[in-house]
Length: 227
Image 1 (cartoon, helix red, strand yellow):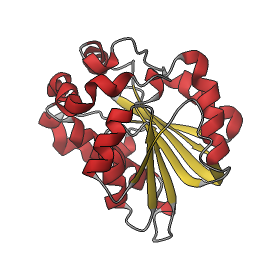
Image 2 (tube, rainbow, N blue to C red):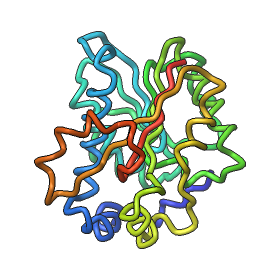
Image 3 (tube, rainbow, N blue to C red):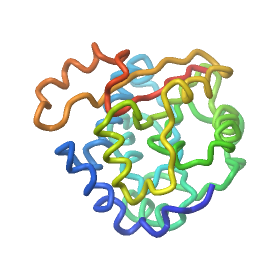
Image 4 (cartoon, rainbow, N blue to C red):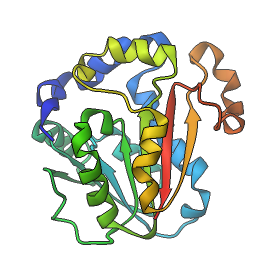
């Protein structure tokens, strides 16, 4: 998994924000949005018990930061292959531990983390390495732990348009929900949740998303695995 994001690190947010203008929201909004989804989908995990959480493919650390704020009782780590992104993350959020990762996560022991999440990461990993990284993440996930793979929904036309016009996604390939779920099924109980149904103009309808998680039309989805 190459450090392809080094060249985008300094201007990563502005680069992301241009194609996202279609939604009326920013990349910062979506980073916090995913954080809130973790709390919504996994309420039993966030009831004051200290947790260890890993942001796999953390980039500049923004979502890692939101997670550490949302769940202050937890210990949060972030890893990414981009050394430039990790440098920015460390400078921006010095209280969080960030590390540069390679094709293994051997600096973490087995069963280290209660929750691991990857936000828009797997579509940048070559498909032939998906199983490898899945096994590595499941190795460091504790028994009864949760892995959440946030991805873009290729069934949504707006998402496809944004993906096509995003410089950071050049050369990437979106994962269809069925494929992403099948990737995790051998390792535990899995479920798909769709979200991101409404742009900013219709944000007053976002309260209804919790009733729409099985409808494969949202701009985004997540596969949730319980080990």
